[in-house]
Image 1 (spheres, rainbow, N blue to C red):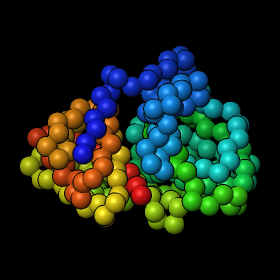
Image 2: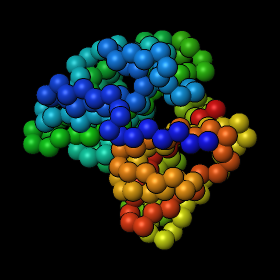
Image 3: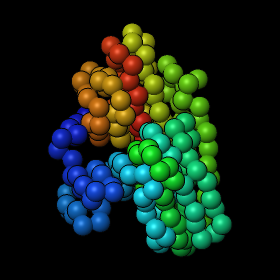
Length: 224
């Protein structure tokens, strides 16, 4: 079963310095029927203006993955973790028993566009952790590339770069689900035509089949 959420139907906040599209209930947006999808609790699509960002703020007991679409984002946290991520890189922060961090667009001329996703932890009270990883988008063309796993591998984030006439397939294990987001292009997922920034909740399927008549990029989360 595929449940498509069109980009135009998503909750959007325009704060001037921040354009935020929240896929699930977050901050002052509350919908008891839209509290997440399985272990995926938050999926935010943000555009941050040059020199702007989120000052130091706390998190606790959450697995947080940040993916850059364009621009750059600088991270600092209370454990000493620090890094600047750019397209082709992904960042992981385990909030664990408690951490404070900031996220700022360090450029004075270019916007930063990113996806930030929070996964509920399988274990609470762990030590905070930070990791930054490169996954090289160029060589990933025409492939389904894993970019980050959390909760000891029970939840994995993938990027699929679909080339025209070259279908891509990902197999879901029995009882698994997936959440897909179209970063760019107009692919089809299991025959369902999608557009840029659409998302899909996938349940009860064993395979994800991605096809496109033009280059497309899809991020999806393989979930328990």
